[in-house]
Length: 269
Image (cartoon, rainbow, N blue to C red; front, side, top):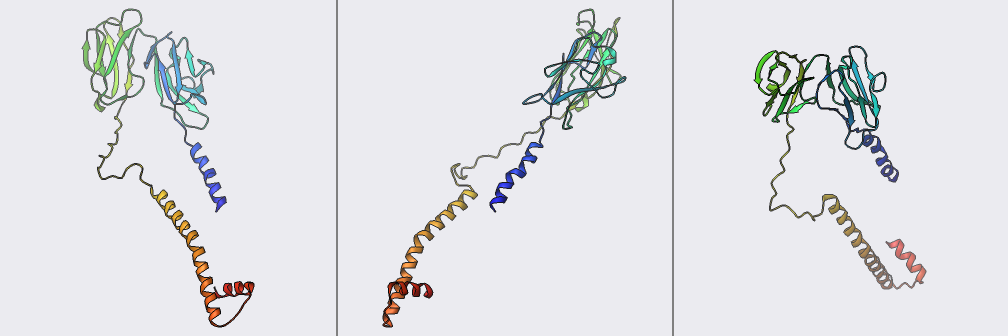
């Protein structure tokens, strides 16, 4: 039984160590579209550390290559692309040696003069989302038209549009257009549901105090009390048994030595 108790924690170690924290990929500046020549930094971030994660990508020219393999420069936990070009357009993600991968990010690099700056990560239902239509050379406050799934949704005089309290119906393919400058590439905006939080039960006035014994501690307490009673009761029971045996032997007129009496008492018991 003792060996089983020792082996049980060892059995749990593989189960505990198999739980791997999932990293998430962040992009700076936070955008899914970039002009050719922009500086972009990508990071694999985790709650406790970023060690053990490798940044990889798939592009139209290269399949599943990692940072430093012909593109990007590894700097601490980040991968910096100092001069991004159109062939850098593709899907990026973080991957660990154990196999899990992070969220995937689709980056688009254009040689044109207009981009749509939109959230690179999924947005949550109920949040506000701002889209910015930017040109490469002129200030980003020119009038712009915004489209969703190919249909015009709004024209804005200052080049940015805010969608308030987004819902699943706002998910789709967005682009923008600035007159006399051109049209941006399209980017997909993903909307996720807000996680539900479980409501804590109402505290009852009849609930036991927090200092009350748990079932396991109650059982242990009862066992200890039983042992204590046995320890106290056993000497009393044995002495009583010896007295009864002595009385019966004397009643029969027998005279025994102390040693014979003790043996006889044990046999009698």
